[in-house]
Image 1 (cartoon, rainbow over the protein chains, first blue to last red):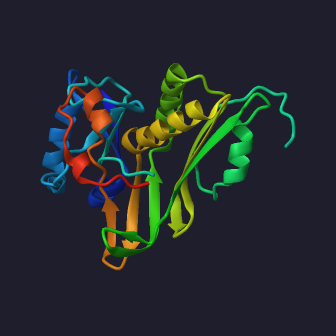
Image 2 (image 1 turned 90 degrees about the horizontal axis):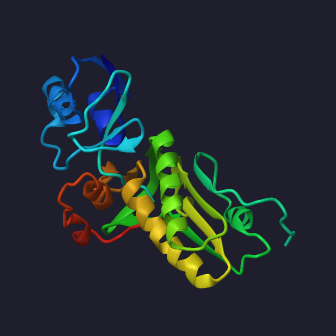
Length: 81
Length: 169
């Protein structure tokens, strides 16, 4: 299956990408995707804050199972206002 | 003020143009409104004692607008409100410019004021918007407080970091 991963704010800048397409086997969770990304982009480790995650425009936990065509977003704690 | 015959619609938007507070307040008002509560978050010239020259905001716009609509639904469940508007501006903002505005009308002031106070807290914890400070100490992303409400909704322990960080609007 294919999942689009979007990065925002500090993550977008650290990775130099605003989105990537990941090909995965079925059964992956958002937490599994974070582990894959930390391997691919070591800069994601040790940021001093935990990334928040969303799937299809909703806040989700790391245990959320992704499906083909999902849009997963990874971003730092929000700081609007 | 003009009479308003058309039904009020909620406004939940991420915008790039300057926010016109007067026009926003008028958009949520109807002839049955006895109160319009208006909150404006404004770019200030300092943060933690260091001079700030401007801010740059970024949003995950479709999710941000969806979260804003969710906030409005929650407000409407709790209070009897008339019009509700939540608008956040993104891009480069100078000191003194309005970054976020909330306008809420109701028959009576207490509902409008109480709902407005909860609305801005929810915007700051739930809506995916980030700001980058350009100041005398350099350029840096402002990291939020781990979004306690989002963490709670994930079933994660709610951190205490928010209590160490003064609220900023």
